[in-house]
Picture (spheres, rainbow, N blue to C red):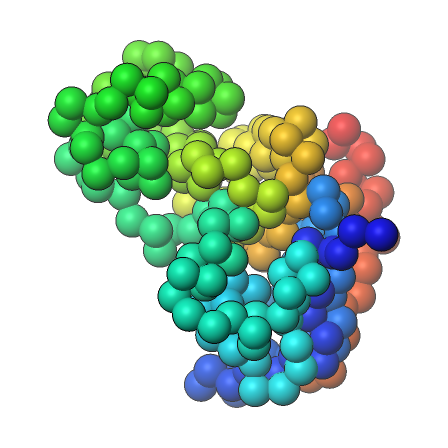
Length: 238
């Protein structure tokens, strides 16, 4: 039996909030799509650092594909863990003066002018996968609208073919009309690629559009409660 993509058990991590981040148990199977509600942006950052091994829990254990993050021995091992996640977050900054395609190339090469032919081909594939119009490929990313910038973040996160797509409040800057289409698009791409989704969001409509399971964190106890209402909304959206 294959190990889960992500497994947190009895986790606690202090970060300066009113209470530490607590998660009693979270298991995400390979290829499963899960959304988490109840983590604000500071708490979401702590969560993302924990699951990628950037920080360690004070209590409990975090495992990625069966390997505990406490067993990471050096920087090379940590980078190998990070590469298993396609991270979509506004903290991963764009190079605003460079084109959309150049920004998509950043995980692949430092040679952006000119871009190697194989990288140029790959960035075009990523842009097409996110349905970004060709007319925007050579535009400076700083001039693009919020929905296109969000799709560009997703495309860049997919560049290394990660088995887990990790989203941090991706709809915060979006118009409401763009929320469901982008959620459904991420879900479709993850399904086609066989990738798991872990989406941290305050947006229940987005959660229902992107995930099979929507879990709400009870901050005081660390329990994750499944939302039947969000599942019902998700069925209506599909």
